[in-house]
Amino acid sequence: MSFYRFTIRDYHSVEEADIRIDGITVLAGVNSSGKSTVSRWLHYVLKGMNEYEKHVEIDMAKECNGLLVNMSRALDSLDRDNSLSEDIYRLRRTMRKSQSTEILKEKLSVMLDNFVDVLKGFASEANGSFEISRVQSLMGLEPMDEEFFDDYLERLHIKLATDFKTIFEKGDARMRDRSLSSLMSVIGHFSEWDDFNKCDIEISEDNVPLISEDGFRLPMSLETSIYYDTQRISEIISEYASSDFARMVREKSGDMPDDGNLVRTVIERTIGGVASFDKDERSIFDDRILHFRRSDGLVIPLREAATGIISVSFIYRLLTNGWLGHTSLLIIDEPEAHLHPQWIVEFARILVILNKTLGVKIMISTHNPDMVAAIQSIARREKVLDKTHFYLATESEKDKGKYVYKNLGQEIGEIFESFNIALSRIDLYGEEA
Image (cartoon, rainbow, N blue to C red; front, top):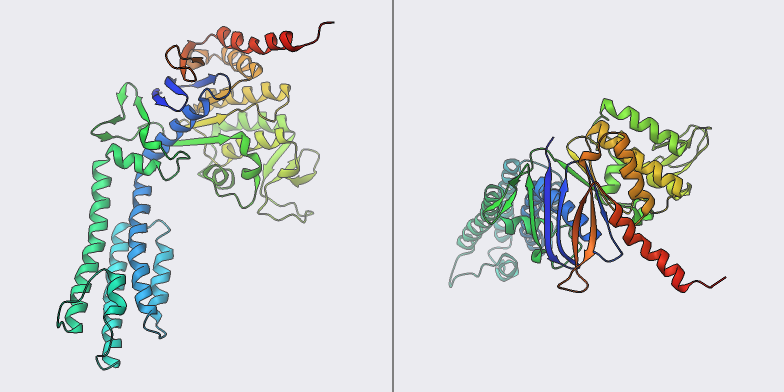
């Protein structure tokens, strides 16, 4: 099974993090030490590479859409009803959905021919009094001195056809070259940071670099990156949520792997029920809302369940929707959030079993000693400790406020030493008996 090495340097509070991912990776450290930064950037890079072509197509569609909007406005300026405006609107809507580039080119070519024909027909009906100035500013083409309108339309047709062709040629070049700058542009689609292009990153698969100055290559064995931000449970649970994670919770990617039945059973026993969109025949709840069906038959909207049940139910949905398997990476920011200490241990067990039975690669960021200890102990029992790695964010010796991530291997003693700072603070601030 492939292993990955991800490195990020000199970005926000991270001076350097050189992280190995081949089983379970645990990032520990104080608040504001960059754990979320490392996790998010790993997700951004993998998502950007694996969804690169899709986002390049989105960019092409946006540019085509800009030209179509101007064509539609030019038609609207004629002050008359015409069906072509509706056709353009429908085409703009279909571009939001996945379709082959060749089909889109054909549709745009037909639309362009019809657009010029409509302008010609209107000019003829108006006995040549059509004002070129009403479309020239929208189309970005000035009329020539003493130019007949038909000649202008011919030049306009050539210009627009060239504009569309240039968009696709540029997109084809991006698909082919896969430059680092183009990848960073794609990452900009979903990055939460404006300075994303200032990040110094490296990633390799089985010691083969995936990113270089010449461009990037796709990972062979890691097709899906899932980022679970437990702090945003209220957003994810909403029936109107539109994030990638919310979509994965709602929609199927495929069938659950056969080996997933063990994890599924463990989760159902842990939460005492199942989470689904199936509406109970006795229920009045909307079937767009995720429900929690308790083992005793009670059905309630999941949002009304305990936050711990909600948090674990999301893992259940990812599993049963087929998103979790040996080609997926599950990144969880503070999985212990909202969980009772006993459930923290149960959650840790679920993660370890996911890795052992399905080969799901897992990265978590945490500052909870119970989670760290549980991961180590259960991983040892399940014989996956050799692929479990612990990292501790340590303050930089060179730059105060920056952190270097220290590879602790399978040991967690230094993590607990850092946690013991809290106990010393209690002794300092507490009252004497």
